[in-house]
Image (cartoon, rainbow, N blue to C red; front, side):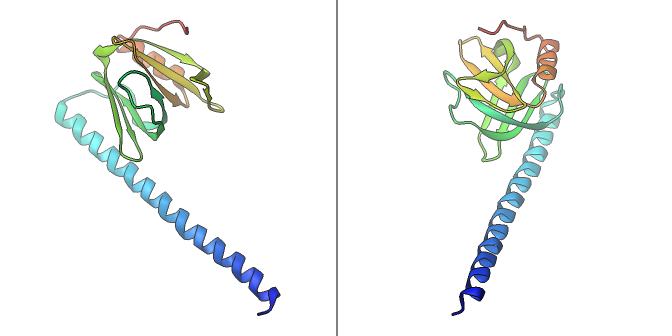
Length: 155
Protein backbone atom coordinates (compact mmCIF):
# COMPACT_ATOMS: atom_id res chain seq x y z
CA UNK A 1 0.00 0.00 0.00
CA UNK A 2 1.20 3.49 -0.80
CA UNK A 3 2.27 5.47 2.32
CA UNK A 4 0.95 8.70 0.76
CA UNK A 5 -2.55 7.19 0.87
CA UNK A 6 -2.25 5.09 4.04
CA UNK A 7 -1.15 7.88 6.43
CA UNK A 8 -3.96 10.35 5.55
CA UNK A 9 -6.48 7.50 5.60
CA UNK A 10 -5.27 6.40 9.05
CA UNK A 11 -5.35 9.96 10.42
CA UNK A 12 -8.81 10.49 8.91
CA UNK A 13 -10.06 7.25 10.46
CA UNK A 14 -8.72 8.21 13.88
CA UNK A 15 -10.34 11.65 13.63
CA UNK A 16 -13.67 10.14 12.56
CA UNK A 17 -13.54 7.62 15.42
CA UNK A 18 -12.84 10.39 17.96
CA UNK A 19 -15.61 12.60 16.55
CA UNK A 20 -18.15 9.78 16.87
CA UNK A 21 -16.91 8.77 20.35
CA UNK A 22 -16.83 12.29 21.83
CA UNK A 23 -20.04 13.28 20.06
CA UNK A 24 -21.77 10.36 21.76
CA UNK A 25 -20.31 11.23 25.16
CA UNK A 26 -21.37 14.88 24.84
CA UNK A 27 -24.90 13.89 23.82
CA UNK A 28 -25.08 11.50 26.78
CA UNK A 29 -23.95 14.24 29.21
CA UNK A 30 -26.51 16.67 27.80
CA UNK A 31 -29.35 14.15 28.04
CA UNK A 32 -28.34 13.34 31.64
CA UNK A 33 -28.35 17.06 32.44
CA UNK A 34 -31.80 17.54 30.92
CA UNK A 35 -33.16 14.55 32.86
CA UNK A 36 -31.61 15.86 36.10
CA UNK A 37 -33.13 19.30 35.55
CA UNK A 38 -36.57 17.79 34.93
CA UNK A 39 -36.34 15.44 37.92
CA UNK A 40 -35.26 18.29 40.20
CA UNK A 41 -38.10 20.53 38.99
CA UNK A 42 -40.61 17.72 39.61
CA UNK A 43 -39.21 17.08 43.08
CA UNK A 44 -39.33 20.77 43.99
CA UNK A 45 -42.94 20.99 42.82
CA UNK A 46 -43.85 17.83 44.76
CA UNK A 47 -42.19 18.90 48.03
CA UNK A 48 -43.29 22.54 47.87
CA UNK A 49 -39.76 23.86 48.26
CA UNK A 50 -38.83 27.32 47.03
CA UNK A 51 -35.74 27.79 44.87
CA UNK A 52 -33.28 30.32 46.25
CA UNK A 53 -30.79 29.96 43.38
CA UNK A 54 -31.26 28.81 39.83
CA UNK A 55 -30.08 25.35 38.86
CA UNK A 56 -26.55 25.76 37.47
CA UNK A 57 -23.41 23.85 36.56
CA UNK A 58 -20.77 23.35 39.23
CA UNK A 59 -18.15 20.92 40.45
CA UNK A 60 -18.33 18.86 43.62
CA UNK A 61 -14.83 18.94 45.07
CA UNK A 62 -15.45 16.30 47.74
CA UNK A 63 -16.12 16.31 51.43
CA UNK A 64 -15.06 15.07 54.83
CA UNK A 65 -16.90 12.92 57.33
CA UNK A 66 -19.89 11.14 55.80
CA UNK A 67 -19.69 13.04 52.50
CA UNK A 68 -18.36 11.36 49.36
CA UNK A 69 -14.68 11.97 48.68
CA UNK A 70 -15.25 11.51 44.94
CA UNK A 71 -15.71 14.77 43.07
CA UNK A 72 -17.45 15.41 39.80
CA UNK A 73 -19.26 17.87 37.56
CA UNK A 74 -22.97 18.34 37.83
CA UNK A 75 -25.90 20.58 38.67
CA UNK A 76 -26.27 22.52 41.91
CA UNK A 77 -29.14 24.49 43.45
CA UNK A 78 -30.14 25.97 46.78
CA UNK A 79 -33.72 25.77 48.00
CA UNK A 80 -35.21 27.10 51.20
CA UNK A 81 -34.60 23.64 52.72
CA UNK A 82 -31.40 22.21 51.21
CA UNK A 83 -28.34 22.41 49.02
CA UNK A 84 -28.78 19.90 46.20
CA UNK A 85 -26.05 18.67 43.86
CA UNK A 86 -26.33 15.89 41.28
CA UNK A 87 -23.23 14.61 39.53
CA UNK A 88 -23.49 13.95 35.82
CA UNK A 89 -22.58 10.35 36.62
CA UNK A 90 -25.60 10.05 38.92
CA UNK A 91 -24.46 10.59 42.52
CA UNK A 92 -26.49 13.05 44.59
CA UNK A 93 -25.31 15.21 47.49
CA UNK A 94 -28.09 16.75 49.59
CA UNK A 95 -27.44 18.88 52.66
CA UNK A 96 -30.35 20.24 54.68
CA UNK A 97 -29.90 23.95 55.42
CA UNK A 98 -30.67 23.18 59.08
CA UNK A 99 -27.55 20.98 59.19
CA UNK A 100 -25.26 23.84 58.09
CA UNK A 101 -23.42 25.90 60.72
CA UNK A 102 -21.41 28.07 58.36
CA UNK A 103 -19.86 28.66 54.98
CA UNK A 104 -16.85 30.40 53.49
CA UNK A 105 -15.29 31.07 50.10
CA UNK A 106 -11.67 30.17 49.37
CA UNK A 107 -9.34 29.93 46.39
CA UNK A 108 -8.15 26.42 47.28
CA UNK A 109 -9.55 23.45 49.13
CA UNK A 110 -7.64 20.33 50.16
CA UNK A 111 -4.78 21.13 47.75
CA UNK A 112 -7.18 21.70 44.84
CA UNK A 113 -7.27 24.88 42.76
CA UNK A 114 -9.50 25.73 39.83
CA UNK A 115 -8.59 28.49 37.38
CA UNK A 116 -11.10 31.33 37.51
CA UNK A 117 -13.25 29.65 40.14
CA UNK A 118 -13.50 29.73 43.89
CA UNK A 119 -14.59 27.05 46.31
CA UNK A 120 -17.69 27.38 48.44
CA UNK A 121 -17.01 25.35 51.59
CA UNK A 122 -19.99 24.35 53.75
CA UNK A 123 -19.52 23.30 57.38
CA UNK A 124 -22.01 21.04 59.16
CA UNK A 125 -22.99 20.45 62.79
CA UNK A 126 -21.08 17.15 62.67
CA UNK A 127 -17.87 19.10 61.92
CA UNK A 128 -17.78 17.82 58.35
CA UNK A 129 -17.06 19.99 55.36
CA UNK A 130 -18.13 19.79 51.73
CA UNK A 131 -16.81 21.96 48.90
CA UNK A 132 -18.15 23.04 45.54
CA UNK A 133 -16.23 24.84 42.82
CA UNK A 134 -18.50 27.50 41.38
CA UNK A 135 -18.23 30.32 38.87
CA UNK A 136 -19.65 32.85 41.37
CA UNK A 137 -19.11 31.48 44.88
CA UNK A 138 -19.63 34.95 46.41
CA UNK A 139 -23.18 35.08 45.04
CA UNK A 140 -23.80 31.69 46.63
CA UNK A 141 -22.46 32.99 49.95
CA UNK A 142 -25.03 35.78 49.81
CA UNK A 143 -27.81 33.31 49.02
CA UNK A 144 -26.76 31.05 51.90
CA UNK A 145 -26.62 33.98 54.31
CA UNK A 146 -30.12 34.93 53.16
CA UNK A 147 -31.18 31.38 54.04
CA UNK A 148 -29.75 31.79 57.55
CA UNK A 149 -26.33 30.13 57.12
CA UNK A 150 -23.68 32.28 58.82
CA UNK A 151 -20.43 33.23 57.12
CA UNK A 152 -17.36 31.74 58.77
CA UNK A 153 -13.81 32.98 58.69
CA UNK A 154 -11.59 30.85 56.49
CA UNK A 155 -9.45 28.69 58.84
